Image (cartoon, rainbow, N blue to C red; front, side, top):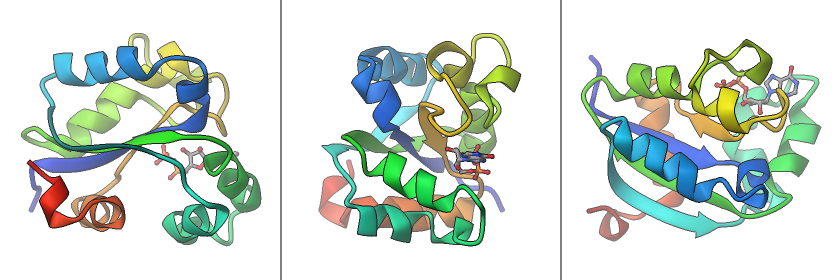
Length: 139
Ligand code: IDP
């Protein structure tokens, strides 16, 4: 069953390059409602925990160090069919393959520094949202 929520992070590269405002604008213009929003920074330990599913991948250490290299924006978003709609909005993992007009095509430079995260399933959206937000931080 699909639910109507997803989780996102604007990654350190997009924050450092001044894209927070443009990306939040793209997200809200696409019809997503912001349920929770936070400007924060992951420690290496927390980034490792968040991406534990990728522990065996060759890029894991680089990913953890990149994701803890600077501040991020975390958010829970709501829209019908949120997971699929948001994956369509952000585009392919590799920005070189991301469709025209997608967030990664517009703001990302490489497959590792790819501007934005979007949950890949309802189950992960729930887990990832809970990782960052308590019940009283959601509206
Ligand atoms: P996704 O973010 O599009 O769901 P995943 O395969 O879940 O892609 O990978 C998680 C993150 O790991 C990617 O967003 C990207 O930052 C990084 N990543 C994925 N594949 C590679 C790679 O081949 N080299 C370097 N980093 C990668």
